[in-house]
Length: 289
Image 1 (cartoon, one colour):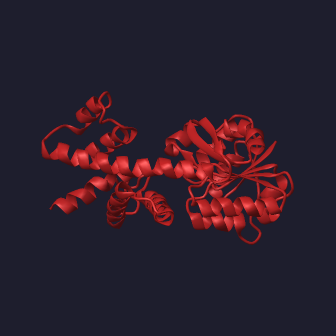
Image 2 (spheres, one colour):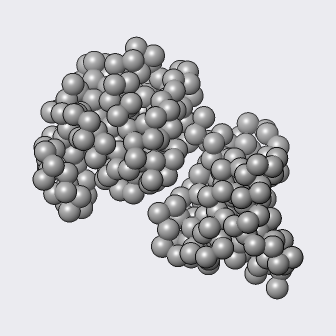
């Protein structure tokens, strides 16, 4: 199978590198060429445009940072779907809203192509290590065909159901990331106030009911206050929590914890959009002054 990958950012570069290292017949495209050069030096083919990549491959994987970019690259003029052909499989790894995923699936179907919404979790380290969780919605037969390539990038690849189910699962995950990170920041603020060592607290919490992945992740970052220039910046969570709370309002759902986390996330974003998500501690400290 000829595989194409578009978007070599914090996540995409690691994902594409794993595909290449594990034997994929890979063609890549990216706006900045230095990352294309890096993969080309390891054996990947270059595509000068989205159209070139789409017409040259059987499976197109795309990983963009924003909903607008996903729409542009997938649905825009001379984008992936405009150049798609019958039987081709298109996979979107971005975190987007349900409307975007379903619109892409419908547009692909009009071309006879198959679309999978397959957002990812695990951060840049998981992308580099090939240990991502990949949650997939769409045609199950297309999922089975794409699975050997998805398995090269993820340790936990799961089919979640029809179109939109992968995106919905990622939003569920991000709701918990937002709420748990906010909770960890609040707990660590209390720890600082009570002169409890944060790393020691996290170690004990890891074997207590109060522990969570986000507590374990945030503890060393918070203890060192190494919030700046993160590979998991708060600006990404601003996008995700905004999608979640909007979806809740549209569906008439009460999401009070998400809304409280959203306020804290937005305050952290105002401090520095590139702050690590654990930097919510600093927003809490400013509230407490």
